[in-house]
Amino acid sequence: MKKKLLAALLAAALLISGCGRGGEDGDAARDDVAENVQTTAGAGEAEELSMAYVPREIAFPPELKKCDSWTTLGDSIWLAGRDSQDGFLLAEYDTLSGSWRSFPLDTGEAHRPSIRCLSMAEDSFWLLLAEGRNQEDVENGLSLEELGYYVLSGSIDGSHSCIRVPFEGGASTETSMLSFSSLLALDSNRALLSTESSFFEIDRQLNILSQPEPDAEGCGAKVSIDGETWMQTRSGAWAPLDRTSLSLDMGRSIEAERLSGSSNAGHFLCRGDGALYAYDPASGEMAEIFKYIDVALDLDSLNNLAFFENSRGVFFYRQGSSLVEVSPKLVRERQTLRLLCFGNTGTQAYQHSLTGYDYSEAMMDAVIRFNNTDPERGRWTPGSSQTCCPIWTPTGS
Image (cartoon, rainbow, N blue to C red; front, top):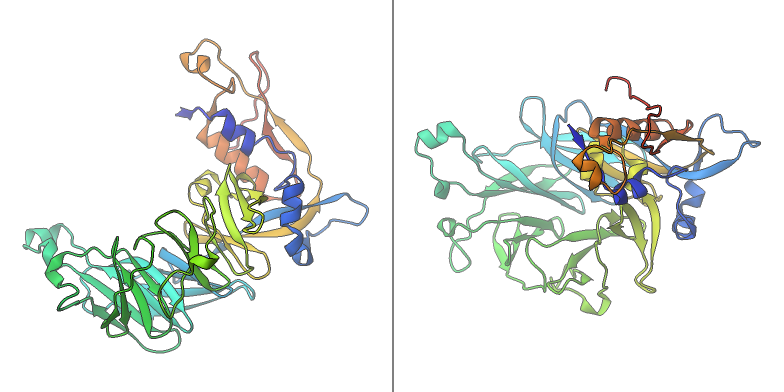
């Protein structure tokens, strides 16, 4: 079924003559990665080249069949999920060496657990698990009150444990039905467990060490900048978390909208207008890095783009059962190909269209795949006509 694409999306997404090329602001945002720019094979000195961010798919290792949560530590991406036997697995991708390694996880006595979140600190990992039930459990009388939460923690190269959250005494009890939403690793021995509005500093044995009250929601947004955790305050500003006092350093707070994604290169990454931007807290200005449409490998990629930037200025995001690397490269100037479509003036939908033509999701997906699979060939961009005109038809559509 065809879906009308608004003019704003088409203008930002398809009417582009170069891959990932912005204006002067975009050029300034790329100065930091100039020394890491690669030249694609076959591009000679006599040819006119331009810098572009080029996506490349990196498949999960065979043992990782499904990823439920991911985070970063230094220049590594960590993913927690399931293996082929439906067991739990922790996998690391080193973005500098391009190597994988993985570790099996034992969830102990947790009943049908699911992963809520993964967090890393120093040489340790922390996972928040929530118990679940299926129809058979319901028929056997298992109630929601009997289900709980577990914290699975351990050393990356050592042992680990999976302990049910008890919270006996004054803080809470198992029957209080607290809903835990987040777990933030502080170091190898401490983590910050939170509900929607409360925080609990815990150790590996899940003893409550303190109940801090930072000016943030327990389920609020967090990003990592050079290994430092920044949290969004209740007022909407962003401030770094002091891992000793567990308070926010409001003296360094910044006002930034749509802050999203972590960086190990010291950048504050923001989303907006279909593009990723670098935010400068000193000037309050944002410089475009690249448009999402230029680094997506298919249409579904546009629905969930959460980026991580490593210390070399290379970006990564997760897509289904793979990672996508987005790196700056020098490529040949690309030829713009014009895509022409019919515009049916007789339909009611046409009367309300801002573009004058229809686009199916299948065609949109094919255009994205064509544009971004090979950085050396031309690019399709949309054209419009209210008369009979040629239409490019993607293979298999």
